[in-house]
Length: 192
Image (cartoon, rainbow, N blue to C red; front, top):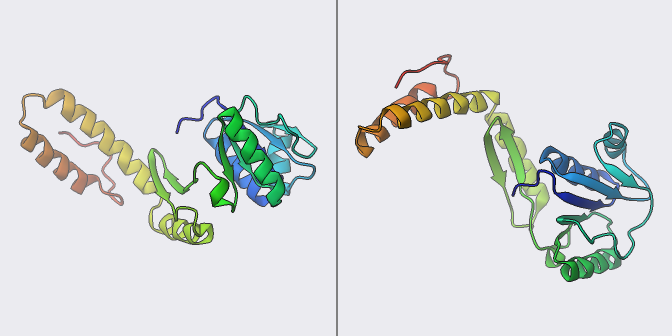
């Protein structure tokens, strides 16, 4: 989902609210946070001017005009009220730890350059997804992003210069290139 420039709201200033806020900011969203208190991580984002913050409780009407909303309040009645408002306003809604109120699930992500690996437990156990993400991060280092950049450039060259080749020949050349550029390779320029 492309969130660049889209208005997004996070209600809740704890660690989970900070995590959701950081993810939205990293996706390019214009983020507002509503919370009477804030965690250290969230305060750092506020101090850096990376979001708007209202130091108060959620109020009816806060959801209007947003593209999506995260509820990280930990209060069932507040989450339910927010879900009802989001549905009336046609706004995507996610209540942290309340799957039945949520319109979407946010996967755990591992990013290495343009390579994105998503891990989802369909909301059943975020802690499990976190552990899987940590394992994947330990295996897939930055060299995978670098290898993808080389492979993408090579593929682009092949598609332009290899138009006279059969699809099978292009597939074979791409397979050879992937074998040569797979991470841990020191080769940075490969000719098709």
